Image (cartoon, rainbow, N blue to C red):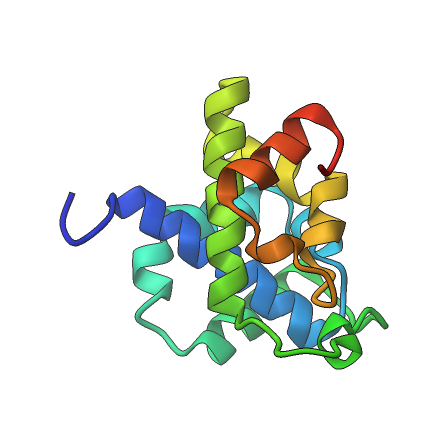
Length: 151
């Protein structure tokens, strides 16, 4: 470990933030981005996150948009937000914590936990910037995923 957090946790943070960035750029749901990238590209992003993190995020996102053949959609939760919009880094942190919790609770690899997180009902709740769910306590977000309900 160098720095404030584990290197692989930081790689996961970048991976989740890049997913968010691509989704916003192409106006697609986050689950669509993860599923379009697929396991191979997600693994590549996660494995090489320390390298990609040093690059311009516009360039990195454009490369993966092209590699995955992602086209523009019509999901624009940023424009629909009535309040301050969290940054892609803010949402990346929310997903990072959720993915780590899912991996731990279900004994999954990080990449498999990414697919679990983004394809769950919790993802749609996180992506609703008009609700307060995305800034709820990380354990509450994980509990919503585990128990299938939001309290």
